[in-house]
Amino acid sequence: MQLVTIDKNQAGQRFDKFLHKYLPEAGTSFLYKMMRKKNITLNGKKAEGKEILAVGDEVKFFFAEETFLKFSGKGLADNCAEYISAYEKLTGITVIYEDENVLFLNKPAGILTQKAKEDDMSLNEWMIGYLLSNGSITKEALHSFHPSVCNRLDRNTSGLVLCGKSLAGSQELSRLIKDRSLQKFYQTICVGKLDKGADLEGYLVKNHKTNKVTVMNANGKKYNSTEDVEYIHTKYKPLSFTKDYTLLEVELITGKTHQIRSHLASTGHPIIGDFKYGDRTTNQSFKERFGLQYQLLHAYRIVFPKIDGTLEVLSEKTFIAPCTELFEEIRKGVNL
Image (cartoon, rainbow, N blue to C red; front, side, top):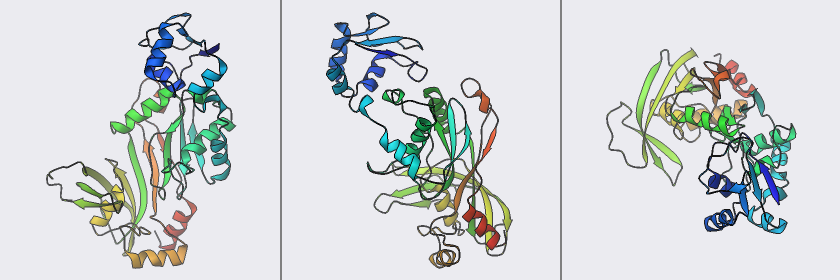
């Protein structure tokens, strides 16, 4: 017999949903059969599957050990080696803030936020390895809940990434991101002089073959949307400028693929180092002078709205991820 006591990261969901996560290799019909036969019980009683779990509930599996391991997949046999390996090998990641529900990280350029392929190593694995290493989570806890990053940055965009440590933290962060309650600000250096701010709207058309987007009707006129066309809204203000370059603070109102990069490029002021959307001659000069091989874009600041409930401690707070050393070197190098 195996006993599981429901914790805060498992509570609040239907019993059958929990069983599917805990025994991912078991089919729905098998799980319901086991509940009917009381081979799976909830608080010592026969369950239907639609019960909502609460902290402290006890789930018992009356299975042979080999049966339990078969239906749990990797389950407890998973030694979490990939997480610990990512934590040890990926360098330059720093913790900006941490509490029992959330973890905010400053990601360097060059690291994926989440895996693109099975053998990738990403910030998500680093984060779980970090939590395992400091005892915030256990291998057993990962059996039914995985902490996860809640917002994504391009591989070569640095800065703030928000992660949920608990189920409640993940759900609330995801809600705030989805309903655009968070204010997200970036810093970048673009080509040309911009001496006043602007409020940009447009529509993004994605080319899946080239993984490149194009800004259409940037003046905000209505566009006949298709599944590959998305509305975008970007604001910016100059922090300093010369006749050749501008240090910008960009507020991301919508968050779409390559939005800031393509939106600025569409105005004739591409980000330096951006070989996909920018000026190749300019970018080559920054590569030779500073070693810059990617867009100089940093997720700098996040401002939380007024919040009640799980994340109340974050209510109306601001979090800042310092720019990279290379960013600061280039900023000073071009007199911004």
